[in-house]
Image (cartoon, rainbow over all chains, first blue to last red; front, side):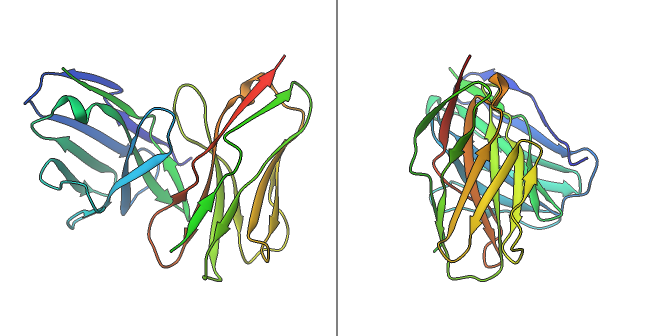
Length: 113
Length: 114
């Protein structure tokens, strides 16, 4: 149990376009989901906490207008990178909490040209 | 604020041998949870083991076990009979009641030599 899926696994887009990443909890309901960003050879950096039915809570320094998060249901959260720029290229990972443990999606590699 | 420290950026172990990864943390909370996550080259984060602070008994999961020293705020991971598939980044993480998210250490890269 406690499987989290993420789609797409890899996306390339042009500068100025928007990209949406989906995160789903497949076999459990998640009232809280988390979005992380990971740079090469570094630890995970929390971007925001997503709560079902309410606004996301963003970490300091994360632009909420650039990284739009929507948690529309108990099994789905989406991260939209708006007006993407090359510096947004990174590995994005979502996570959901179940029974006090956090389970992670496989990640999305975003490359902005 | 809570912090998690992994002092070993890299470790190496011979296949079939035992290795211990270190983790220390700082907190003023009495109720919390500690985790070890594995991130192989695929970059999928995998939960290895969880320890509840209120439990005195060290958690074990097959070849993985922890040495939880609450007073010393130490939480090390022991991998027995190391296998090539154990090669990965290992992250120690803390979860307490006052914040809603995991706090990660910087990770330890484990190499397994055949």
